[in-house]
Structure formats: structure tokens, C-alpha cells
Image (cartoon, rainbow, N blue to C red; front, side):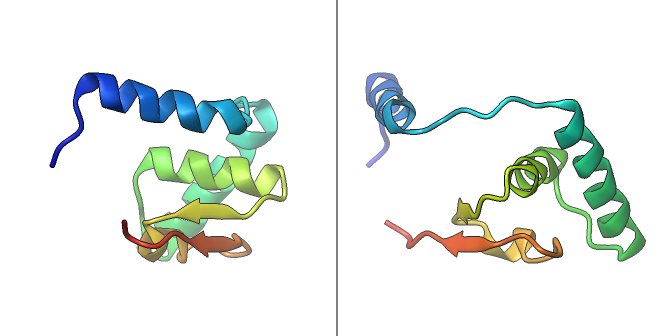
Length: 86
């Protein structure tokens, strides 16, 4: 069953109610550049949006909760919390 636009909007609002949205800062951009260079040198590239997500977690010393553990395990020092498939 696919969610309707109203259901999607409700789900996003529910997440944002308890989540803190972290800004993209200069420190985050610099960390993203370092992660990009690391992945490129190892021929292990992932999408830029995932690099930015990882860099944000690293800058704030936060674990990253994701369903996409495979890509994020390529990033050194990133602490991951795998979410179960629902």
C-alpha cells in the first residue's frame, strides 16, 4: 500500500515534531569534502546527498540511523544505527 500525499505530509510532520533539523554549515561542507575525497580515492563513491548527511552526523558527533547501511559503512568513523525494515 502506498501512502497518499496527505499521509506523507503527516509522516514528515510527525518526524519533525521530535527531530532537530541541523543546518548545512561551513564545517559540515568541509567535512563533506573530506569524505568525498576519501570515497573517491577508494573508488567507493556514494550520492552527494548521502555524503552531506554523513558529514552532518560526523560534525555533530551523532550516530546516523538509516536503512541504507551498505553505503554509509564506506565512511570511516561514522557510527551507524541500522533501522529495521518495516
